[in-house]
Image (cartoon, rainbow, N blue to C red; front, side, top):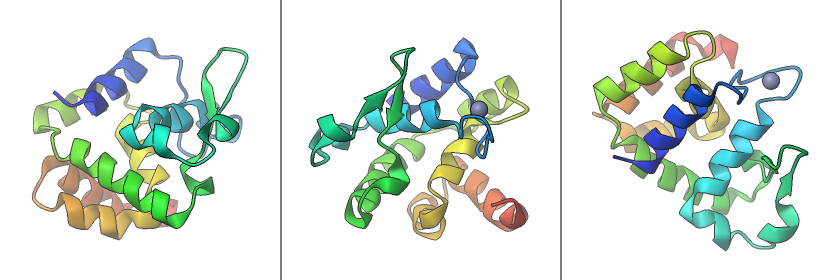
Length: 143
Ligand SMILES: [Zn+2]
């Protein structure tokens, strides 16, 4: 089982991470920064101790994917895609079922929307790829 699935499931079950992609209150900042902190590449980000920030709940609120250099963004998308490719149909259904209002997977894909086409090219033929394709085709206007 991929660590990503475990993380997303954990986020859903704890119910205290905001996963509303464009939340006007918090911008889903804790979720987005914590996701980056889980990556293997996280410790290799230059000046990562300076870039990382936590809030009063000791949750990550930085770094943000979009603040990082393009080359790093590319590496992050590559690592995320390796995990997304492991997701099964059942796992995706479970993630959807548990967080109907603001699906966690949708929030994740919105985070990487500047690389949607590239990410999709890495996911073609997988359940996560089908999910992303649906978002690209039907929700373009919501980006
Ligand atoms: Zn929020």
